[in-house]
Length: 344
Ligand SMILES: Cc1cc2nc3c(=O)[nH]c(=O)nc-3n(C[C@H](O)[C@H](O)[C@H](O)COP(=O)(O)O)c2cc1C
Image (cartoon, rainbow, N blue to C red; front, side, top):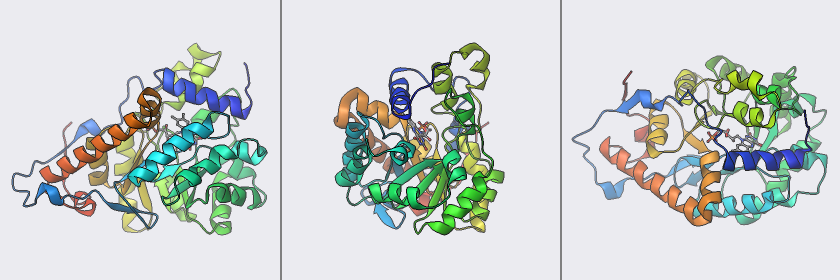
């Protein structure tokens, strides 16, 4: 099995995500099982509808962030710079990819620093993997990573499935929860935890909240399959293919975790195959505070550059306003209170 250095692996991930179909094969993210109830008396003016909402105490133009993807290899500086410029223009948050490589050496620090340079006034999210967190002896490395982009929150990704199938993976999750607890004590900024496409259950969310995590991004099944990406990189493709669709669908994660909001103060992010305004609106009505999207944003950038990505974001915002009008929600907070029905 061929093993790659961290920079060449990060580059391969982007190339596979842009050029290959690495979405789930049989499973969906589950939003097709829900519908809004049409409101024939919305009692509002379309021109008053606002998608503005808060994230990490910033006012953002809409409840969507470009999720953690890349950094740490030559071309990542251009990609992160382009994404950051768009996020700044739209006033939406952005996450960087794993900063593990930047802890190892400073060769590609620019690929992370560029993000804060291009986006001085939006919420930015640092990113590190669970295996690194379990090994951490002090907060020094992680504080340097936060400082690289002047991050507003630190995101830890849980990716046991990916580590298991990755030729270079570290499938050792012993001590991850206590590592996260330690980080919560060390850092002044909030800690968010995300999956990468296999979802977070209510039980896992409870354990994360019990150690002081302030944000949970479910990154559920139904969008990018990270098992799929690693299977394509693996020489044992046939024997591993049944893991391609492993995971909890995004809508299921959000509805499982929502009840925890009555007793815990945290931000619930819906992600995993979010591509349409309907999925964003249903996420919020199901209980999410914000949504995130990764591969669809990257594909738009690679297909038609910043113009294409801007056009997609404009369309998402306009469609979100249309849906809000049809359910009589002028503000995002009202959309979060709207009833939905299960259609299956
Ligand atoms: C090219 C690429 C690289 C990614 N790298 C990371 C990473 O370094 N850290 C992380 O937390 N998630 C990473 N992800 C996972 C995404 O943040 C997201 O959770 C996942 O792709 C599901 O969202 P999607 O269906 O919108 O793509 C990456 C995604 C893509 C497409």
